[in-house]
Amino acid sequence: MIAISAPWLGALEERLVLEVLRSGRLVQGPMVERFEAAVADVVGTRHAVAVANGTDALLAALMVHGVGPGDEVITSPFTFVATLNAILHVGATPRFVDIGEDLTLDPAGLAEAIGPATRAVLPVHLYGLTADMGAIGAAVGARDIAIVEDAAQAIGAGFDSRQAGSFGTGCFSFYATKNVTTGEGGMVTTDDDHLADALRVLRNQGQRARYEYERAGLNLRMTELAAALGIAQMTRLPEIVARRRRHASILTEGLVGIEGLILPVEPPGRCHVFHQYTVRVTADARRTRDDALERLRAAGIDAGVYYPRPVFDYDCYRADPRIGSPDVPEATRAGAEVISLPVHPLLTENELTAIVDTVHEVLAG
Image 1 (cartoon, one colour):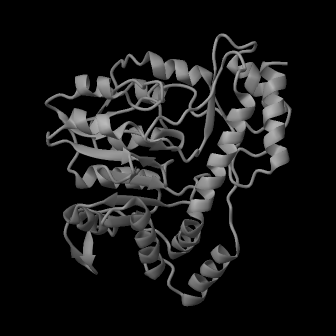
Image 2 (image 1 turned 90 degrees about the horizontal axis):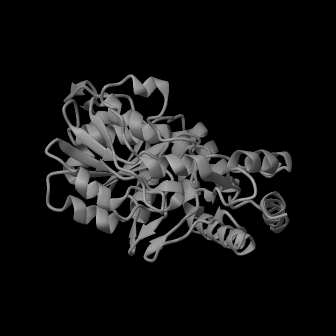
């Protein structure tokens, strides 16, 4: 089976993890600080604050912006569930704006959705492609509305020479399948000194120093072991991005022209880092999406669906009065069409050829 994801780990990860084990310092120490500095340097922000995972990053970002009950947060309906969970857990009301052709939040819909209760906009940089941050920023304008970027899948992605996570408050995930992995881990990036200070207090049970409590905080601390992996991974980020982009180019060159198959694109001014290489199997294809998916897997291609339906379209959310009845036909259509193919940096030339050949057999043979 050609895996859809695989961590790229090496000798540096091993050495730094052993260094942590031998130090006896396992949580919130010098490795975390080094990892934070590496992320801030790449993203181009004054601060990067490490947390335990990407969901915690979203939760903490909303909390330090003061988002809570009575506030609305505008976001995309086509995303991983952590985006929605963070909004609900701070007590806010999600308001969904449908996606555009790039599968990210439609800025035109955003402009129409902003209202007096809007406290934050939470665009999602999906599959390694940034949302249209220029148009999103223009829609928000000078209003007192926080921009919280869900950049969980987009470390290293760019928009008009700026990095994902630098347009507002950036939230990253370093889960096992991400382009940069710490197993579990997250980061919040910001240029705002006050927000960074609030994040550091919040993640440490509300303490500025031991037993000096300033707020009702949480335990969001990152371990030194996770940070050690992150430091090593960040040294490899340029090569990780280069390989993913090269593999995506090979896939696109090999798959272009298949009827009913829409390939991912990189809009002008954006740098796609291909956390996922996601195609769409439309009604014009010779097979349905689900049939194609089953045949790909049977042939040894570990393809996946990210995501099968709008994020709110599950029984556990339908009963929540804050959800309402969003009308998001583009997100619904995408959920019925998308398939993600392996694109990770450890793929061989033979495996890439096998992916292309198998897709041709399934959809064009």
